Length: 118
Length: 118
DNA sequence: CTTGACTCTGTCCTAAGGGGCAAGGTTTAC
DNA sequence: GTAAACCTTGCCCCTTAGGACAGAGTCAAG
Image 1 (cartoon, chains in turn blue, purple, green, cyan):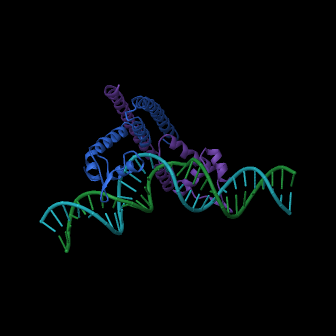
Image 2 (tube, protein in one colour):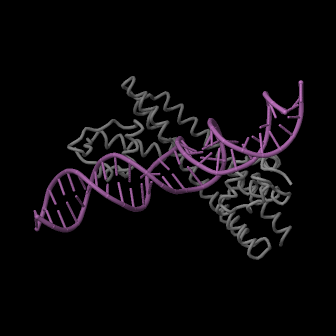
Image 3 (cartoon, helix red, strand yellow):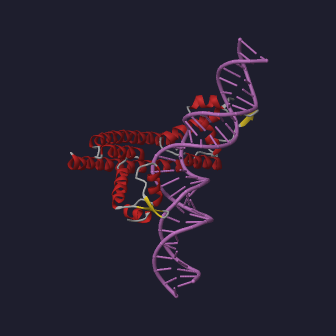
């Protein structure tokens, strides 16, 4: 059992972020000791998972859906997670294409500027 | 001479975006006919340039700097533009690295999930 | 009892507009 | 002449994932 600062320290999230997760229903509403939120090791694990999923490109609403699905069936929605991962990877491929074409556009812009002004 | 809707139509920007550009000092404050903003062909060219620069990755504050520099010397700041282009390309390379590592992380996450739950 | 560390809620801020609203101006059709 | 249809104006709230800050309440230690 710990307060929000400890949870933040253990997970690398800030208290502000943790309260945000709570406010959008991504983590359960914790009990209170007086006015202070009290968290358990389960919350540490959950916030850890959230942060890790964020670093690989999931946004909070996607995570909320996964958490909701898990709460419904009480098991991890592996198939849906796999689908999400696949579509994330597709999106990454699209992002790569975009970066390549932006780079090409920058090259052309550079050449054009130096033809025009150089 | 035209109103904002015509300028929007000619440039592909929305009236909303054009007013935003004006509010941050990216385009000059236009004269008015009554309460309506009146634009010239110069504005068409400027908004066109803004939009094109946006598509290759420049944000509005960067463009504002360029416009300010041009206004100061009354000539296009070619050297600074070239520097900006070079740093944009560097940033694109960094983005690409990040995408590749994210993709790798997704692969590993996928394998881990299916080892654990599959 | 007081100090310092921690937490609470609430507000405003970010980039680049999107959406919507009411009020007023302009143009076209009848 | 007037009504419909369209255009512009400013204003407000909304988006992501929190950051910064204020003011107040709370906790443990000295």
